[in-house]
Length: 182
Length: 221
Image (cartoon, rainbow over all chains, first blue to last red; front, side):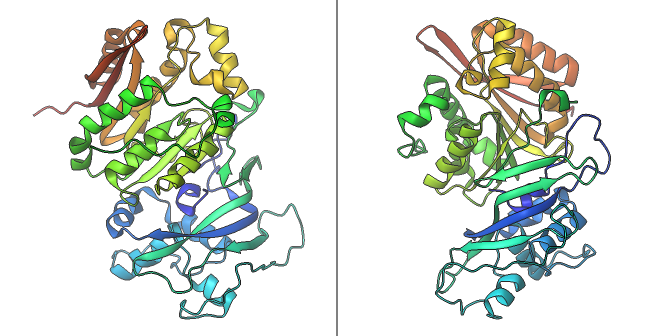
């Protein structure tokens, strides 16, 4: 499961790559949504360990625009909800706009939707191609049950050395070859 | 009593490639269960297990703290193990984030002094030194047990990072064998990093005399 919370904790560790090695950029990310209960206390405790800008950028790469660019000083309930969505779940603007369901309760019964964003250059790091391949949506979200963003396939690219870390079956492969280990 | 995680989804094919929970694993669970109240009282946010294998131990930690109680991160150099870890979490309704990597290499820069619970059941069986490193490089099941000289080659690498990883209230749990020279491990952690240690449980299992050690920061006053 490469959730955005995990993505926010991974840095490139290739030999000699010690600056500008975070955050890794998503490439060809396939996104799956799974249910997740909210725990506001966990979200509040986790926030100090996260990089806000990296989180906002990663969320935007997978289509979520709900977080403000600057980290708010006050951690109110609304912000906790938004963070939970981005970190753990996905009942957000992306899905709403994708599924034309602004209130998030009127999901179509289809279990497969695809969205291709325009891609001019397959190696460009600034225009990642996002496919929303499969969504397992309950018809009406259960109270306190939310949805999760998981990056299931694709890759993460170091912004500095451009090392490619593949994601397969939801598991990031952060292994390095012997000659790449610092 | 906290139940042992359901592992019925794992098959012989999985256990050909991933270490099957055995006496050491179950002693680890018993030790964590014994410490459960202490662990809960710290309100941990981030748990990290190194070399999670089947995922049994982190799943058990998820039962202690609850599915949404903390972030359960796991690393394993064996990609099959990383998959089994996620599957075991899912089977027991504990969300686990597994990463295929060696020890903590991709996480250390971002998780410095952020780990509240650090868990490691290392490859502790004494072998010759080459064997341990080759086993790690192969990323297969031998990496789960081949520990090199004194069974400490891989453990020693992690011990160097523990102080950087642990949060101020963090706890580090380590499985060790008597032949690993436990007094020497504890003395090194105390002298080099000021981390105090305690044996929380021990058991003889066949030829192995197994210990679960707990390390934490020492506060004066």
